[in-house]
Length: 292
Ligand code: GUN
Image 1 (cartoon, helix red, strand yellow):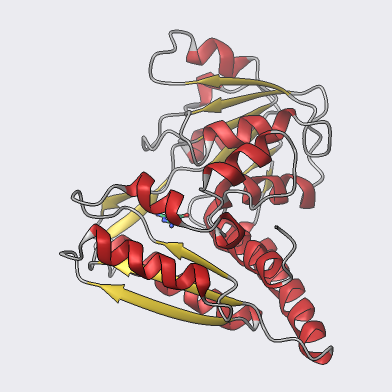
Image 2 (cartoon, helix red, strand yellow):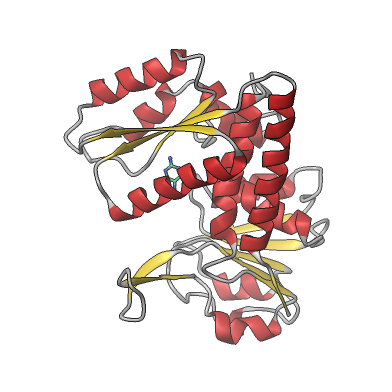
C-alpha cells in the first residue's frame, strides 16, 4: 500500500508556481493577483479563505480579502463583483461559498466574468471543461487529476467508480476521467444516493473516488484487492482530541480499507491540500491571461 501524500505534492506544486512567478517578475510582468470575497464569519469559510491567502503568499501572488457582514444585500455583492470584473489589477477572484440564504448563489456565480472565475464554477468554464476546451477547472477534480499524474496511476481502460454526483466534484471529475488524455480514457461509473448497487459497483472498481460527505462510508468489504482509493470527504466531526474541537474525517474507513489498496489518500493530508493548489494554478493561468 502506498500513501498518496497530498501535502508533499501540494508543497512541490507551490514551489513550481513560485518559480513561474519569479520568471514573470524577471520579464517585467507583475505577479498574479487573486481577490477573495468572504461574507459573514462561518468558521469553516474563515479557515479556507485564510489558507487560500496564505498559499498566495507562498506562491508569490498578490492577494486581497474583501469582507462583508452576513446581512450584505445581493445588490451590494453584485456591485462588488462588477467592480472586480472591471478591475484590471485583479486577475482572478472567488466568492467563498456558502452564502447566506437570502442571496442567490447561482446568480452570484454567473455574475463573475468567466475569464476571472478561478473557482471554475461559471457555466462557461464548466461547459468548456466538459468538451475539453481551455478553461478553469474546478479545484477538487483538478487536484485529484494532479495526484493521479504525479503518482503515475494508470487510468486508461480502468474502471473508476465515483461516489457522489455534486456539481463541483463528482460530475466534473467523471467528465475529466473519460476524456481522451491522461489522466483519462477510463470507464467511469457515478453512483449516488438513489443507486441500489453501490457495493457491487465499488467491488468492480480499479479506482474509487469517495465524494459523498458521509464519514467512514467506504468499508473494506466494498473494495477490490489492489484498488486505488481517493477520499474527498472532509466532514468536521466533534472531537476532544484537538484544540479546535473538531476533527476532519474522510468518507473512507481508512484503517480497514488501506491494507488492501495499491494507493490511498489520507484525510487530512490527501486531496484537501491539493484543492488550494488547484486554485493557485488557476490564478497563475489567470495572471498569464491563458483563458479568454
Ligand atoms: N466553499 C467550499 N469550497 C469552495 C471552493 O472551492 N470555492 C468557493 N468559492 N467556495 C467554497
